Image (tube, rainbow, N blue to C red; front, side):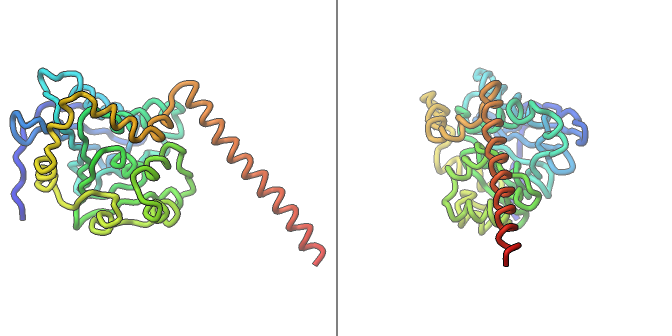
Length: 281
């Protein structure tokens, strides 16, 4: 068994309790002084649900690392969990549905931040990453997954919540069609080896393998020119533009609502037509 990687704590931020979650904290550490590798570790029991407060805390940590270059020189950001079973179990639906600002101002803001972040980002999946938890990881540049514990999946199909357009976009952009079909239309659970073979994650392993990836690809050097985030914004433009705020978000929600209403009307007309046909048989 590989020895634990020694880490030095740089700062800790609280994750305030939400209506249904107890809260916790986020710790930023580094494996060695001057390495320019920053490890954001989430501890929000029982399963790191993506509440408004957790999203806000992650956004604050990303801001601290970007906007304090004298104290934290630009490098690489790893996001992981201290909870043995979960990276993140996705959205807290009660929290999300009760707050109309949650999607545009908290969750979408976090997804977009990672997607355009001006440093390389890595999701270290130590355990399960379900639904929104996997989406969070997909908005990072690289994914490393525990080979022996945890699954990744998009299980919205199982509980009847369709993916929003921008959420779909990230899977279309980062997965081959066969993998996205298996994720979205089969709600398949991928273990580490299968997730790597499907291209959902880049490799299997833990912190040691993650640090090796950073070294081999010289990731700490990639943001030196100052255009790393701009390059990502163009690469993933479809998803970036989908994370609208304000009036743009309202219009997008209205468009999605109109599509759902059109589908309901189609079903109503179809059921009536079939009823008339069957009555004559």
